[in-house]
Length: 382
Image 1 (cartoon, rainbow, N blue to C red):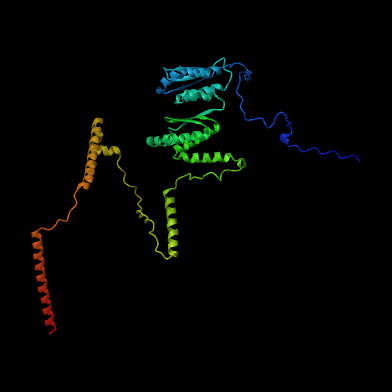
Image 2: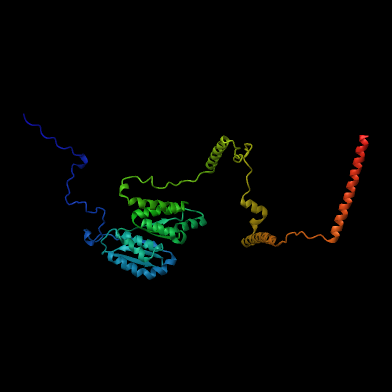
């Protein structure tokens, strides 16, 4: 009897065409990015010219004129031509016949963008490296109020630039806050973290929360045992949204109720209850009377027909009167400290005589009244 043929090992359908790769060893870094050399460009010179242009503010013109020779020297080895147009206030870069790297034109575009946003030439040139990327974060349209925008932008920098320095150290990025934008240079992972920190800061989430989270992550990354585990249990959990007034009131009432129950069990009087609810208004189907517009009020007072300089003079007069009132109140408040207190002076000889005379007179009257009362009592007894 013939032997049964050996069963072939079951191979996964997706891996049936895979073959052993003896040259692929563990000591090879698969993520290493080799620099692009002229020999890597097999197709030769580009058939079409690519160009990018960007505008720069007036205050950057003087600096750009001084460093433009350094910009040209940095782009020449890559075969990129650059132009500085002072009439229209723009910078432009374009490919030439010597350009061999198809991606370097995008790097040159980022470089002139950074120069326009206030980055120094020594730092902006680093964008031409393959391991460095950039991101320009727009923060001008996140907050409408000008004062609030300035405060939150200053919060990114921190006291003496301490917050900005901490962000740079933790993300390995260069960060520059300029006007209504934040320019960032560094690895892609760091750019993502910086964008998150900046936008959250403009949405009223303090950078210290993200900085603390990054510090914890950096310490956890040093432990190889935690490489395959979730780090959620180590990261701090901050409240994402503010409680509404109704939610705060409900929580406060719950705490008061718990305290009152505990005091009742201990035999103590309950605490004062929360503020009484406002009385409900009587429902009426008619809408409230329409309030006058600002223009209507100005028409009634005659302010609407005043000229611009007359309105300014009127406002200045009101402001001055208000300032005078405040000044008078402050002077009166300061003068209170210099008012002499009432002192108890020693009575004079005449005052002493009058006092003795009145005391003696009152004493005689009192004795007479007492004798009369006694006589009446005796008569009633008889």
